[in-house]
Length: 187
Image 1 (cartoon, rainbow, N blue to C red):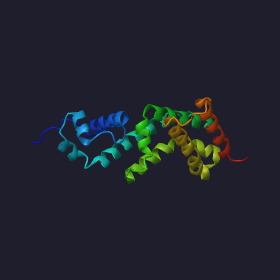
Image 2: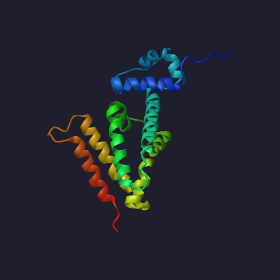
Image 3: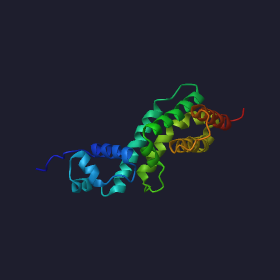
């Protein structure tokens, strides 16, 4: 009879995610993850073939959490309020998980079909409101304007690149508002 595992894949991913947040993408080893969950490294490699696959699992975990948060913020009959709330939620998520959030956009990440689907799922809660503003045919194009603004703002904020003063919260909300006005279809 096989021995019961001492830990689950979910526990391993959660421990690795905590290490990402504390140490950054490159600041920990597979041995550190194994130690954090109380197993030996060879057992960890039995679950995740390498560090890249573990980082991929962390990305999936992050995308799922972000998807859940954004899906809860659907305000009936007010697409602008919904999108503004969702943009703020993305920013809060990134502030709470700065290293994890940056992992989602790290060019060193190995693209997988599962990761691509998880990223699409994370953006999906934005699409109904964008369709209401921009039209069904232009919703995805509108997402390709809003999401890079939000991500770029967050990246600059997390890097402490806004050094000229002024209120960042107001600037963020103004940027989202300008984009939403810009993608609103003409009557």
